Image (tube, one colour):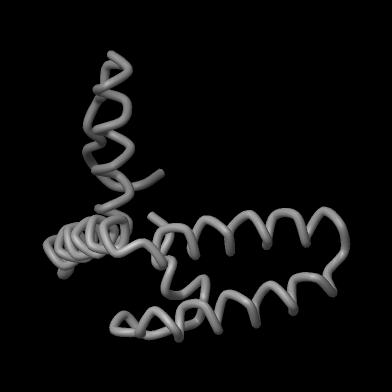
Length: 107
């Protein structure tokens, strides 16, 4: 999940005026980029502004962001390699692939 606050470089409690000023400033900086980079940057900035400038969409985004942050917090303390392995196993199960658990020492 993209953090639109990071995209615009603003704090989570930024007022609507701050959102607009940050968007306009970032768009000016994006205008100096090369065509392909500029298009991708502008698309991301427009998406962030569309969400954060609309109170209802922003509220939904904030709730989703908090849920995502809670899920990350729930996995703290588990080694990253184990988290990756768990994610891969889950993905393979959804695809219907048989997953065998590794046992023993590495070769």
